[in-house]
Image (cartoon, rainbow, N blue to C red; front, side, top):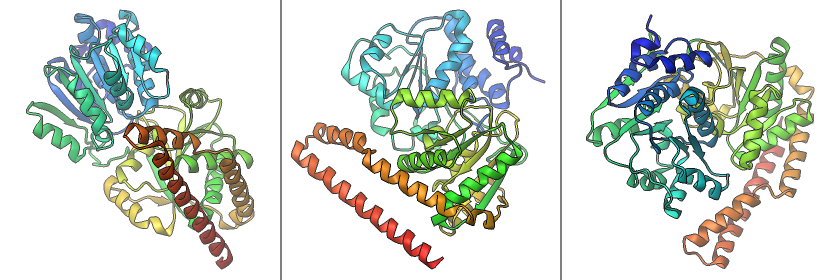
Length: 454
């Protein structure tokens, strides 16, 4: 069996790995670490929970210890929460060499971040938007001498959403650098990078004997339910699971910030204590939420896809998809929050008749059929009205608290920066609000018709 010493890593790194409970390398670490140490560019793809972060962190820290200076490496990642987690892992391994790192994400004070960057830390972990803002607004630091660029969750970073910000960042980087791209899913974007970069890439696609996109330790189920009473089925799934497992943590994924907040409020009202995590929250509240969930103070987390990638929380034993993601690969990332590093776990997806095609696309991608999670429909009938009314009351409270006001203010700023007249910007936002109101009224009418029909 291969150990870390066989990969060419220094004894101090091996000791640090042992202190955090990492005793032997995973498959992606065995294959990518020697390639990175030898100076090769690398594309590494492996299932969630397979140790991708250490696959790039360990060789980077070894090279840094041989030639220490700042800024030595830049790690880009799509979400703030993942950025903080990666920074924590670098800090844990790099403690014995007095590693200096900083995390550059939105929602935090830019002046403070600028001062940290001016001190030239060894490692910078950043989300693309905030780092691009710093590059365009201040000149107290330089990325011109970095040795390593890492794109973690590279499929998401190169999927089109961050193109403008990444273009700004890449212009500030040296051509002579090692580029390391890691992801749980191979995409056309990653293949495109390899073909057009003009550089040779070592590529590792960690496929096991099963050929599945999800790990064999994951028990994958579905619950077929009417779309208008999905929340009641959610409550029943939690209730059934809790009757058999009272200690494990549960993550519930949904599609929008508003839906996330509404479900959180509803479940709290019906006695299922939880915390929410979504992009409309202040960054300090997001970090506080994650801290409570990771420390087991709170055992249920309702989240949007900001929590779907990279987060490693060993206590998560159940993932529930409140909605079926339209992109099958996002399903893989969501359910990857459980059954990590050889542990077992379960994923339950609430499927409505409208989701059948999406479910089939997911089953095709993962190479397996989901089995049914049995629920008692008669039991659900006894509390469906209570759950529906509770959610409607939560929605009224949310509207009264101007839930979307922060987003509207930010949109107004963006429109003005794009050259729009303030009055013109206000008119655009007014039309958006009216569209949302019409959509909500239409949804309410559909729900009433469905209730009457049933």
